[in-house]
Image (cartoon, rainbow, N blue to C red; front, side, top):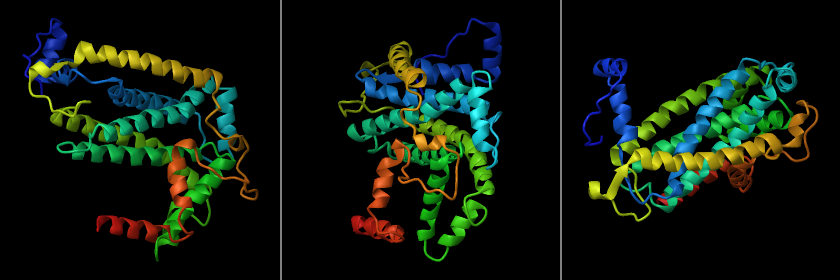
Length: 319
């Protein structure tokens, strides 16, 4: 919390509400006069950018969900209907589709900044752990969302990734069949992936809220790696960092708009514009670019033994 005096709101309605539920005072303290290190560079913009993209993804996702049909016979055509018949449906889908890539770009840069400047060190360990939880939830949400268009890559990607769980000893096959809701990727799989894809972003919001609370308790570190000693080393968040974040947001939106309007399919796979066919396997089944590092790790393991290799690798590293 900031040591600044409580704000004196001029609007009587705001003053009346704040005297009974001090939400405006909280926002003022945590996002207005909150002390920030003076020397933060533009790498510190990416946390705020990630929050903006998350909000955009949730809003566009809700609107797309109103038109999408989670049925294996209708899903592919419902996406085409959104693109062709729904007012501004093409725009909503392209924002949502490219927004996933943009989300991972800003989050990966945010993670790189944290690793480079040591944001995982004492006393910020819990802050880092919450960030890892957000990343795992993001990956699960993105994977399930990629299945929903029900193209060739959607179907075969779901088949390959869910089959990885069969490597667990004894219970692997049962886990896979539970995920599928049957004996193959089919309508129950699509339905539960749609439900979870809709639900998980709201869980992400809850974890992000914890992430921000944890950040405001331990405060931001800075490029020098020297902890802030007192008020002489800080400036208020507003207007200094709201202006800096606004500039970063403007540049980011220009890049985002370029992909949405001029290269909307650049980061996608052409096979996903072919309706899913369980009888035709694509020659190259590859995930979206943001999953490629994890895909490369999985490919380096012996088929069916990856769970053991990860466990023994972790055990050896711990020793």
